[in-house]
Image (cartoon, rainbow, N blue to C red; front, top):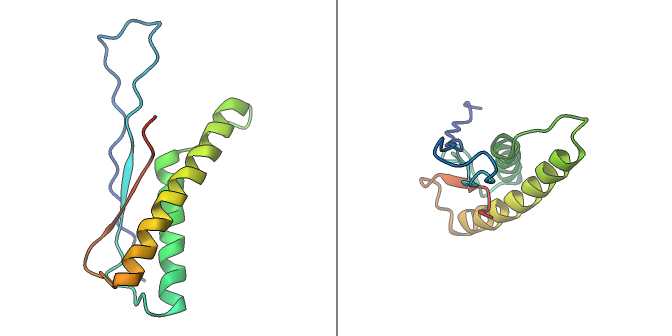
Length: 109
């Protein structure tokens, strides 16, 4: 299986913001390619699901075991982002649009 191509845009922080302001949340994205998969088979769709999960983990990041609030935010991000990506993946599989890559993006707050 060829390597998964993932491109991500990371959040940028503006230095012009006051120190007390909350950072502006910017959605992060990853591209999940699937043109090499046969989405008409269970094997192909399972491979796409694994790629989506890896992309979700990548865009949502991780939190320290000691940061309970951060871990909850990561868990919520993964749940929401995966739900969005699964809807897109189902559309791609249904239409067999094999040449178009799938974009996984976190939900903006």
